[in-house]
Image 1 (cartoon, rainbow, N blue to C red):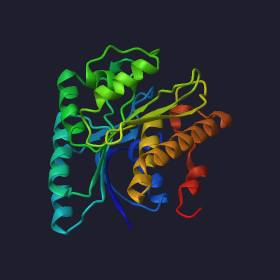
Image 2: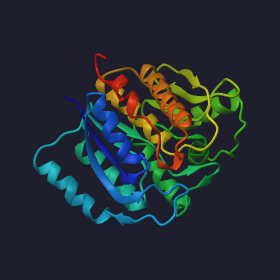
Image 3: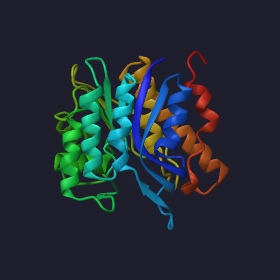
Image 4: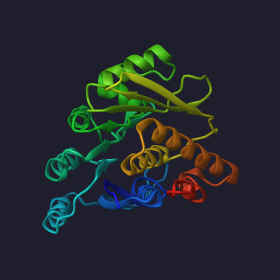
Length: 276
């Protein structure tokens, strides 16, 4: 069985970060080994009063124990990291555990809607650039892409803007840029996938649902990472990740549940099971 090291926080309520990665990657027939960077009672999006425990001081010993017992990953996948020290840890994890065949996926989760998340600054963004340069695949949203490349943020950039942004991002990862939350069709959303080796770029798009849905980036990148670790190519994996995420958001919309409590992806996990 293939193995993914998943570095992210874990929120008890909200179905994001590791709470999404664990079931999604496991359903796809890939072992998910979590490295929790923090434990929260809920995610932080529009929910107040949550508890938070930072686990940065535990991370080095955690990884050292895995090293001692000989655990080796096929993929290292990082999501939200709460500090520059945690980025340094992921870099050391990559340096200490990866070999020539290890896939490195980095979701540079640090910003949305044109601004950095609370508590992050330009120094953090610069350190994230270093981590992105260690990756085979990066999956920034539009805001993160603009911060990484120094481009001015706009929600309404056309195909030429997106293409230039993707090409600017290509200096970071070794193989693939996947820009999320964009489409070449007005009124739709999805991603643009760029393969550095071939120079090919493809869009994969779906419809949109009204409202804000937390955790879509975690769900998308977890599906993508699982399928690519399993051996599927980047374009097929990205297309499947877009479709899975959209179905789950649409299900949440249909149910009418509070979107702060997480996206209803559970009924679609069967679609990821090998051979199903």
